[in-house]
Image 1 (cartoon, rainbow, N blue to C red):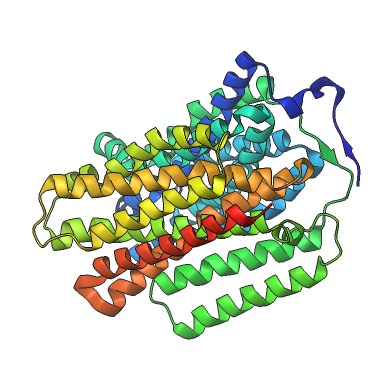
Image 2: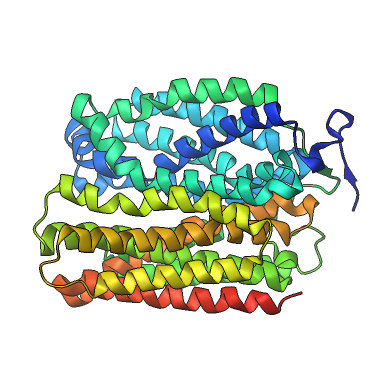
Length: 458
């Protein structure tokens, strides 16, 4: 396989000049924040959407589901396509589609029209998320990539966490279509900056595997659908069929790509111990996040009897500390072993989750705040070094597939964590939050072990 580099961007491997880099990062992170926010904000608006469009709550849930399915199902194909046509083209195409779809969501007149627009929006978000870490790799010089991945992790964590609060603030002053309309001006600005400032990235000379893309999309789509079905307590038979079908398609895809130079499901990258361990620890960390962010609001409101406003206040220390720690950890990862930094972060996250599970019956506000801060410290300390490990263990011409795995690990981990939290509530009822938090501590411990194992990888 040969890699061609456009003459105009021969310096891309060493990053962009300082001023151009700042503009490029502004475009990348603006789009990433919008796509991350839209994975969370629609949940808050579901009651209003159901009432306005005259549909049942069960039907309105598909406003969230179609976005997630379209997003996750196409991450790996779009990441692989970015290696062929250039990551900047996938990113800009995704951003344009996301912005247009946001307008369509804002003017939707029925549930069907909204679902169509949300599906397009999910596809656009996939174009953004599938290549954003690959672009960060080419925008920052090698000595600063840890810092770049730290900022990337900060944007994702804070956008995902503050999404519900931002949605509540918008709904307090306007109708639900404004949740989608606010994306339009930010999207237009990011498109303009992106076309002018994003670098052209190397292109591989192999063709695009359309059959492999279809198999990968069906595999991931069925997996996310199956996890969602389990979370909504649908028929166990249906859940089993969806998950078994996903596994079968994954097996077929793996066998089909055994000798492919750039497989859609990057088994060539998973053969690298550093990449495989880093991807596995990423899934563990986001399972923990999913468990916490689903179970804690129920714990604060139903068990402690706190209001929605107080619950939002209690949730704030986690993303706030992530925003502080992620850039620091990113800088440290440019000088220290990622296995050590990531392991320390997951140990802290596990301790924080265990301390939350052991909260007294009537905790004081500071008791909640400092425990949430420990969770945020650990989560933030882990993400940037781990992202650098994933991207750094893949060769530059496989950056698209590695970037797709970063996003896939995040979204599948969050979805799995949410489903496990729902299962905890279904099994033990009122104590479900405590069990979910304890389970999260276990996943953090498992992830920390895998992270420390990376110290033995050469």
